[in-house]
Length: 212
Image (cartoon, rainbow, N blue to C red; front, side):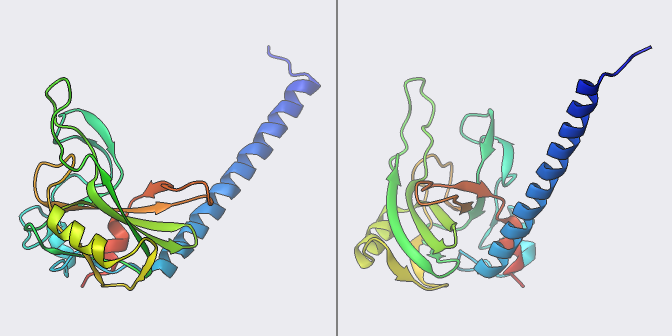
């Protein structure tokens, strides 16, 4: 038979304690995040996206989900499995992109012209995009804007200017690593001042919750 010494028993108890503390921490983090999302209370980030059923099919008009959404998926650019940190909402070029909640805005460029890499594959990147810092460690990201609307709104707002929920901040486009006109939308949670981009979380239920 198998015999257990005092060291084995102590290790077993220590592991159970660690597992229990880990479960408690996860529950606390989940409750904290839930509270932050409720406080954030996002609205639709896209003009014309008003009904929940529009997010059920890529055929929805004028806006709807056009990819498998958040998490693991097959990339429409590389045809390889990848992690997708947001959701993609289809809409005609120039459709207004709106601030999902109050916050301070900044504009960025990440491979805006797309183009091909050394292997002839289309490069990845958010293209012309904006981020809004909502405070309390919460941020939203709006990717693949068209250049004209991006530049117009970049000129309209200085870095860290305050925007209100529903304010227009850009227009749908196909910049960066994109295969068609759509808004790439993310919600991110940061852990502190030095964690600028933070960690993406699934925004689907938050956006659906804002719709009729």
